[in-house]
Amino acid sequence: MLERYLTAASTYAHSIDHLFILIGAIVGFWLIAAETMMFTLIFKFRAKDGRPTQYITGEEKHLKRWITIPHMLVLVCDVVIIIGAITVWYDIKQNMPVADETVRVIGQQWAWSFQQPGPDGVLDTADDIRTVGELHVKVDTTYRFELVSRDVVHSFAIPAFRLKQDALPGRTISGWFRPNRVGTYDIQCTQMCGLGHGLMAGRIIVETPAAHAAWLLRNSSPSEAPQQAAQSPANKGPTTIAEVRR
Ligand SMILES: [Cu+2]
Image (cartoon, rainbow, N blue to C red; front, side, top):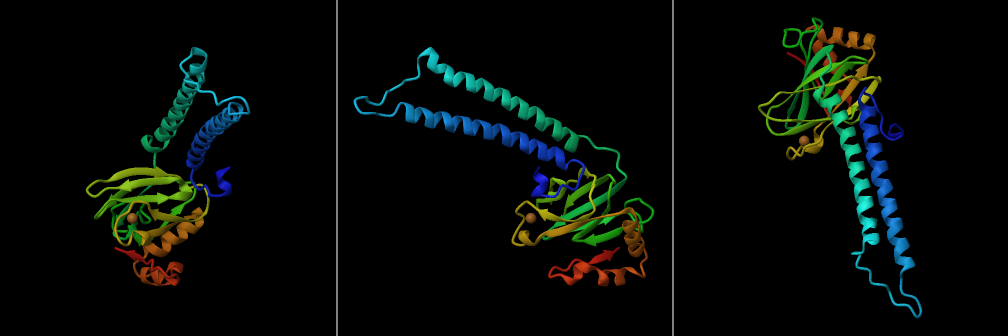
């Protein structure tokens, strides 16, 4: 439903959407019910010719029910929302599925940089690929990310994945995502991190296995890396996004 307005490109995006729809439906129902009741009572008991406005204290038992019964029902709705929220939180934040690949995400004033394994598939080895402002991933692959900050608090957000995670200096925070739709999606910083916060954007490119293998190959050869950086379409835009290699 929300996908009409915001693309969903990860396996857990729909879980978040369903939770928002559930909360919106429950809150919307009570908003309409409460407003309808309020205006109905206003018009029903308003002053009329020969009849003054009634003053109702609400202390009688049959009047108190108008408060206590909706109150109980709202508490039941709260429990439903809490159960839904905990279930989604557990699936996304507590549960860490077995990852096919690990990437490192580094936030600093004011850019995102990424470190991911080269052809050997292992992070922190000589063939790692480092990029700035641009992360290339393979569709239908489970990624574990290690999120760090070099200076202040940032927040790593990919709206199309419904992913948002704060990055704290001095800590490595792990999370995961599994992109399930090929395309290019925005990466944002969603935590005020200084003057250049608004410029701290990037993009994640979800590729088919063949396209990702080709990208990996192009960037795994030191002699081709500068050429690749020069050819990067990102370099044609107003924001310089250079692919660099250690
Ligand atoms: Cu920021």
